Image (tube, rainbow, N blue to C red; front, side, top):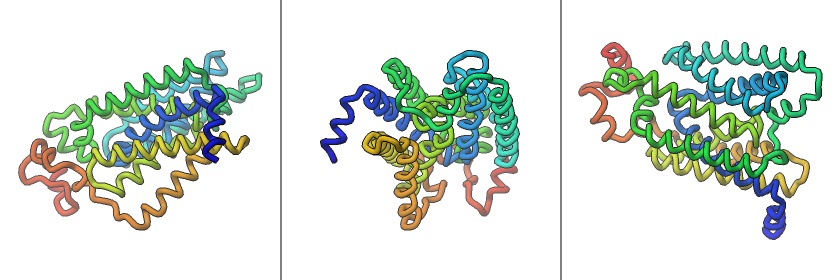
Length: 303
């Protein structure tokens, strides 16, 4: 089997799919950890669906679908950020934006008179259409996204832990959250090319959810998440190449599920307070304020 896998990568299209997939998985896994810790998983689910509407609009106007993906997801990220920091308000804003975008996507598809194969490939992903120039572009954008997240690591972690206290300490919560959602939008637009908008959520949530149960340290969790994401992608592309007809997204989603469920059953999730380094707490959180269930109201009132 090993020799069969090696023989597969003699084909350039599979080399391109694997290389672009590795960079995409790296970016999605790193970003996905913060999505989970900050309670933005619904946004990670909505942005790919919103991006589909952008792709449909781009095809209708005679533009490459990936351009519509980028524009629509970035605009949606800005709209989500304007929806508020409260989880309920944010989820309502995400739901309204997503349903409006899906309505636009259906309208564009109904008005488009040609064969919308390029739009449907956005739904399910494709490994055949990835060129070497796409690999270079994907690698650059993925590495930029990861670097931006690492630059914002400490304040971003603080915001995801407690945005109210972070704002009270002078952290630009609104700006950093907007920048983070923009990074998520770019990552989603890149990942859709390989796994499709329907299953990009797997790369965003699966590795991070597993890693957060294996360790309480953010740095270790991000490292484990990145390793898992890359491993899922390599295994998914390889198995899809061996099967011939089965899509990459199916194998990635299945592997992610089969890894997560035993971890979910046998490893207890570490509390979010334990996941935040004590050094960050002492530096940023006012004395006497600790984000536990007993004094949450006290924390919110002071902010």
